[in-house]
Structure formats: C-alpha cells, structure tokens
Amino acid sequence: MTVSAETLPWVLAGIPEVRWLHGDDECDCVFQRIGDWTNPYLGRTLRVRLCCIWAELYKQFPQFVQEIPAYYDQNEDAYYTRPADWNGDTEMSRALWHRQEAAKLGITIAQARKLLAGQTPPQGKERVNGRKQRGKQTQGSSRGSASPGA
Image (tube, rainbow, N blue to C red; front, side, top):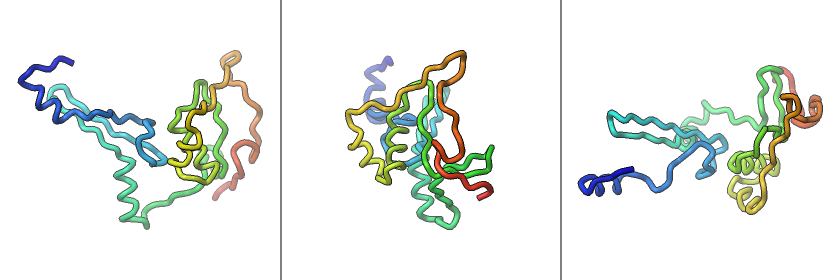
C-alpha cells in the first residue's frame, strides 16, 4: 500500500491493526460471522463482527431465539446430539476445533483454547478414487443420537 505524507495521519487513525476474518477465533461466539463490505470508489470498508452483535440482540429478545444443543440434519429431519468427527480433506481450522472440543467436553471456548494450546487439530482424510476414506456411519454411531421429526 502506498501512502503519501498527506494521507498518513488519516490512514494511521482509521486502519485497524487486526483484520477480522471468519474463523479467526478472536471472539467466543460459537458461529463466527464477519460481515465485510468494501468499495474502491468510496475508499471505505465496513467490517462487522455480526456474531457478537447478534449475541447482544439475543440477550434483549430471548423469546425469539432457539439455541439447540444438537445438529439438525434437514435431509434426515433428525437432530444429532454429538458433534460429528472431522472428515474434511484438509486440517480442521483451529477456530472450529476449539468450538468442537468445547461442545464435546462441555467447557467454554476459552477453556478449550487453553486445553488445546500447542496441539495439532485433526488432519484431513485422504481421498481414494475421488472419495473420502471413512467408515460407514449408522444412526447414533459417529454423530450421536437422532430423534426423527423432533
């Protein structure tokens, strides 16, 4: 970035030192969401940590919030109470790993960060013939209990 002496004070006053990104693990929200709008013709960027704002709104309007301690699978119309094991192609992101372990262990995300410090997140699964290598999942085996129609 090129900055002239004329614009240096303005730039220094307005550009944050830390750039928020989805999955940056900079907050304790379970579902991190960062809104990011930018326009070169305006010379402006708006970045909003929506997850934190929503968390504050939830406190004001709890009657409109359902926080369900289970994953809802729309295809099966079932809830699963146990977090699924990682089966991605690449290493699991640290932010997701912290949240998964917090859910599994019933601890806070901050506690999970401390507990997992220095450890390596789950690794990706190799693909053979374009398909992931994993065992057959049965109801209740790796995802937890299901309750159809619940």
